[in-house]
Length: 364
Image 1: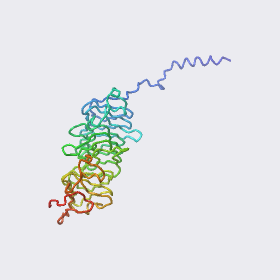
Image 2: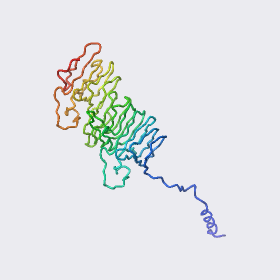
Image 3: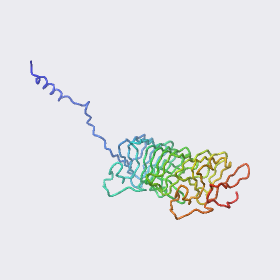
Image 4: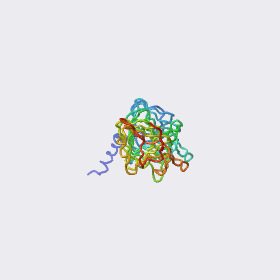
């Protein structure tokens, strides 16, 4: 009998000569950091577990952009992302793998991509904003928006502008700017010019100057949060922009106040505004509300914990104008609630839960 080695040795030699192309992929691993300097003009996917650096002042998106869970997007100083006519963003992360939009100085997400060690740290206003610019049906879920809002003419971090429609769910907006611009409050999520079908649910806002502004015709539920482990926002409220409401809406948030900034917000004929229990509506100086079909269309106006009061009133849902004790509320801070009863003569409401309104409002 031949020795076993005499059979094994030729077999080993044969194996050495066979290329292992089916078991070994010689293609090198792609870089985990991708620098972007060109606009997006065709359908594009940004891959999860990669870091994308936007290295231009304005990155224009004119096609479908899909962002996978776990992606980090870092934006250079002052940079913006702007959607065009055909642009759309679908950014659906997960709880385990959120999608992060942040500053190039942020080493805690995507590592030290600007290679400066600890020489720079991120801060509010490091980059500009994501401007949805009239686009329809963009989606953001489990996204984090950090350190944005640089633009002096628009301190928003996400601007749902020009009647854009979008959905935001389980997103975090933290350490961004927002602020008061020409007597207008601009939230880090600025939906003041959004389509009324835009929705914001289960989102967290903290460490910002102004968390959110909304179109007066947007409904807001009670699922969002406006603080995190004791950190809230400087002007902690939902600021309402616009003066005409022509479709039924509901305002249910009771952690922070809704703030009416228009001279007169008008709830149209046979249009209903439903308030949740413990909802507080604050009014900026000389602001008012007109309910065209009378108090029956201001649903739950006398509900438990519901108040209509001055923006300076810190006793009801906190310091909404962000000035500490610099101002205190007083009579005639705002005008009042006018119940038009369009089929007959109207009157100003005199409910017990109306505070600091004008006791002698102008005749309408």
